[in-house]
Image (cartoon, rainbow, N blue to C red):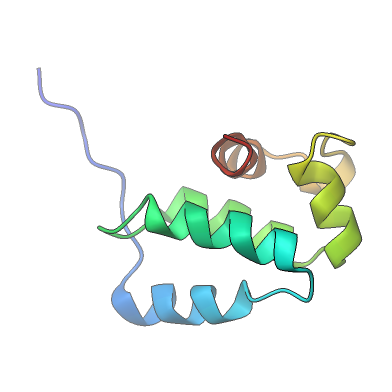
Length: 90
């Protein structure tokens, strides 16, 4: 049985997303860079969606989520965000 590959974002979108993920807190930057390093072949549309939603947060709110001080709630509590958080937290 063949698994269906998730649609991936293109190189331009990946480059823009990497730029958007630059943060003011070094801790956030380190975790996000590690995430990208785990996906040398690129990232799926779902992961890009979750990461984009997380980048709308303030640095300290993002760090609270990454360090499990808080869990996503409200608009940010989506499957895509939880999937990205699971990877960022490992």
